[in-house]
Image 1: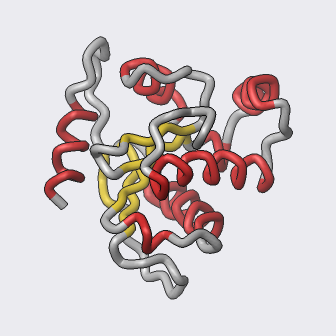
Image 2: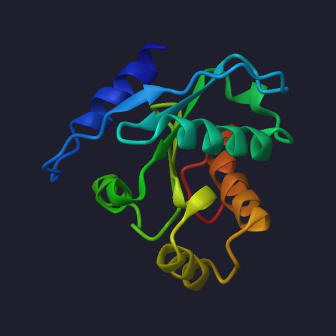
Length: 158
């Protein structure tokens, strides 16, 4: 849990942003197969019902993966207006829908992956060559979990 706290501190103090990105834990009574060591957060400003809806979608999408291999791990859902500055500050392409911080034991996800605007969906489709939908969510999560499960830094190998 110390690494998760460190990650949140680092994420909140992102350089180049005039506004801090803060998160709250998304708690819900779930009866799925997601291990208790997997945690979910939404950025502040996220409507609580929308957060729980998107976390539920994320949990369903993650269910087939061997998440127990990750150990303590957190998934952070970020509102669309905060996404691009946050992705840029971590050296990633702002058009990408997610990135993983291995040292932070965390994957950060643009909420647009689950409920994006028409413009953002077009942008994601041009970037990936895939229509936004369940197959694209699976593609993005498989890639990010390739980083986490394999502890792989290389984008091409993940």
